[in-house]
Length: 253
Image 1: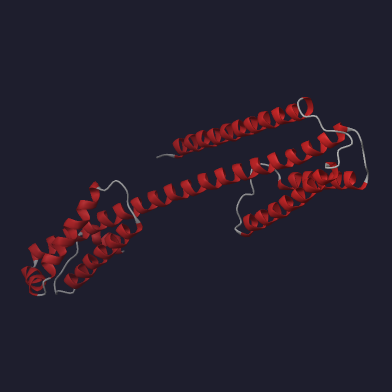
Image 2: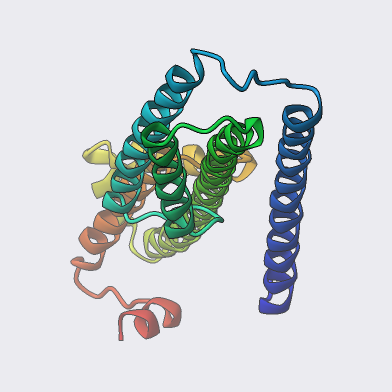
């Protein structure tokens, strides 16, 4: 895959991820707007109700608690050196602090205007929706990043696996060439039961050409088989009068 194709694929993924995040933002924004409209036009708050202060105390406590959990979540995210999400975390912190100060202001002062208490409810829902959207985008970006890492690891394992198979095939061909030129080498391999093991290893490695996905254990197995064949070639080259092929002479040089 060339650089231009990789760039096009990456641009497509980035555009798709951005469109998804924008879609989530509009969905949550629409839901928040509906809640604001419902709170303003369909909810009637009695101006002299005894539970208004209790409601504000509950909103104040909930805002303070959610801000604390949000800061703990950010600490965990930053400790892992990961992206904190699509929304700037400082904006959400300031919005939560503004909501907390507004609820505290209502607790200290007694008002009879129901719109002020409705504003307190909206100021609680606003940071809550921003926080939810923030962590949704963070989790989505984290999932996408890990998926790309798995794909990169799979591609790396595949490349390493095929490289071991290629090198092992070349080593096997060189050993076969040396056996033809020097029958003593083949006798030595058969006497030590190296011949059957070498052929079995080559057969196992060639079967991996049909594998769709390489795992780490597969690459480790191929690596072990390759080093075994490489050691056999080193042992064969110790025979007097052995002249390496031009391919291996140039490679070792």
